[in-house]
Image 1 (spheres, one colour):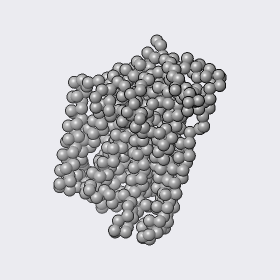
Image 2 (cartoon, chains in turn blue, orange):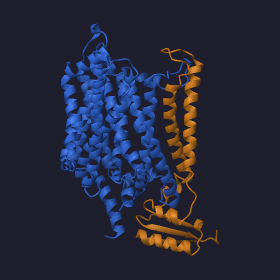
Image 3 (cartoon, rainbow over the protein chains, first blue to last red):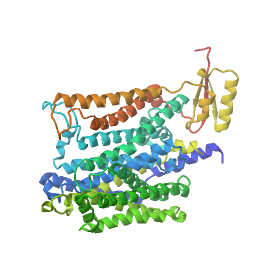
Image 4 (cartoon, rainbow over the protein chains, first blue to last red):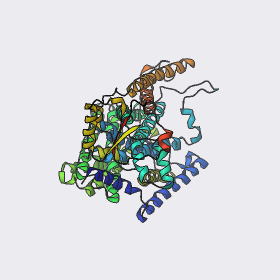
Length: 431
Length: 145
């Protein structure tokens, strides 16, 4: 095939996703949108009636909402790993996943950002967390991990959004040629008048490199800061030094699983087998396996430190985790995060997308449970047996959590139909 | 007057570009339009390195300074001891400074890119000129300029 034809085929194949949606797509969108509606109604119900409708009881005052916050921030991480870190390492298979992963990062952070507000109860006073001069003359407490979160997650969202957009500028210029009507106008404006001159490409290359370099430390720093929300306290089960690397590995692990969960159906639905090959899936499966091993190692260290450290409270907390009333969740978590991914040692399974999809969904379940187990069991069972308690989620919390999944997948489905799902200019470059 | 050459093939485009430079056409008069970044163009047409990197440096440095100045000065303006920590607690302030370093660095690099590439360009948005997937060499007539 002539080069010109090959380039035109890339345009056609990738932009074909934007054609009129089919019935399955619309049904999926309707389903996810109805989950969003349910979540929204339940949030309104909670705002009307107060946080009492959530299952918080003394001493468990952080539960599913914070679990969801940590889960969604964690999901975001793999997007940055794939788009920034793999760019710096010049990993070719990155081009198959980077756009989907960057979109995932942005949407996951949007969903994550809602949970601290939902968890506040009085969501409208969230601006107390933002440092700005007021007539009260008082500033936020910069020694508090919750303020670090505002800065870390805020920075992460902004940088990810810029990275996502910058990557799409040349693609908007390509997509506008094929688009019609209002979509053509929007793409033309979003392309900022990009022509593809050597001057533009030169500055663009430098910008992309720097954005990748700036985003790379965020992969490690943001989830470390999130882990310090817990580790800075003195609660047994939270107050350990391994929390930052443990959370970062877990974040990349869960995010990689989510990328696989999203890209396997995407490839099938959009018929992108030529651009997202089994080799690419094998590479990403190796990241999943590797991070799974780090996470399993962290579990061992965590239990090891508790049993060897000689601290009765820490030991009690971990005994409760493994044998207490939440033991089924703990063991499911270990099964999903430590045992299931071991199947990926077999090359045949790494290249089998059905198998990868099943593993990735189980990992997502496992990683959600991990955050739940860490948060709830530690709070329910800390120092004084007199104040030990338990926690059961209410329908409001479950509904809002499902709504968050609905919101994430709704945004993702809209992305798939409205923006180029793969990086057109990068794929052409590698032809 | 602009001399325009359009190629469908990347290699033929690069050959022609090399020939032009060999024939002594000054690099400033050559403009190139490509559907994706072609690294060889940078080798054939010697240009200055992009100055976006200075924006990255200045942005990042100003972020660090802002992060420390903001946290230290606001803590001193209402010196309230919290949790037995010193008023100026450098370790937690490093986290704020670190986040702002990255935020300001990334945003300022983006601003530098827009400035140097002259984007957003209204002329580009309104222009109907379209080369699709072709590689284009534009040679400007030096005498008329």
